[in-house]
Length: 118
Image (cartoon, rainbow, N blue to C red; front, side, top):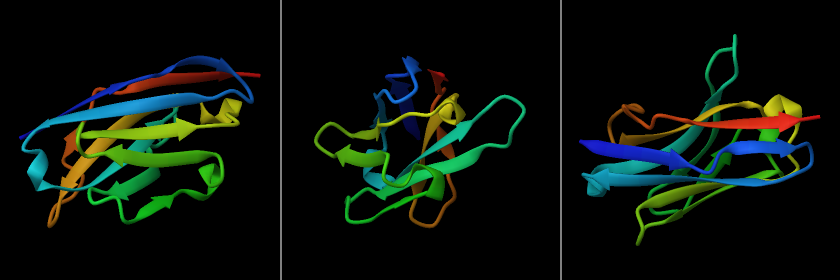
């Protein structure tokens, strides 16, 4: 099993920044990729960004490219999401997720709320 705990959410004005953290524990040696997803009220959950556990590759949804950066610290088994130039439409519950090599995103954190005021 892999356990994930997010932190770092909060309320920020438009144009501000937040950094989310996701600490992994348990069978972290099985992790192949980790990702951030978000879900706004009344909307479907959407992919935000992912990173290989080796850190060699990242990908982002178009709406956050150039504003968000995903990174990881393997020594701390932690993945980060640096969010800059936040917009009201970034308001959502942000969840981190982990997958093993031949699996889907089967491991999820409890989520952290990000609210951006205009």
